[in-house]
Amino acid sequence: MDPQLLNYYEAIERASADMLAAARAGNWDEVVKLEGACVLLISQLKHAAQQPPGEAGAAADAADPRALEAAKIKSRIMQRILVNDAEIRHLAEPWLQELDDTLAGRRKTLH
Image (tube, rainbow, N blue to C red; front, side, top):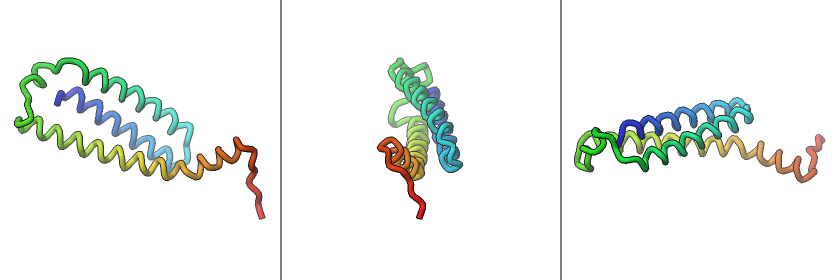
């Protein structure tokens, strides 16, 4: 794997962790802002992945220990991103329900 691609995965992971921290703090405006950054990073990753690999990437094949290690790192990063995403979604559920209720004209009543 091209080291540049791994850098994109790491940047997406950092943005994902920042999104989770913002969600835990209830800062949904920041979550949305960081989500936009993630979308941009993912777009850049897709574009970079379509480019021919550099000299270092061209020599690497599936049996290359460096390629195997990079694949393991990528897998761990992806797992952490998915865990972060799941927790963000869990934290967002009450907020999304409240937003849905507000948009539907239902009010909270206190008893």
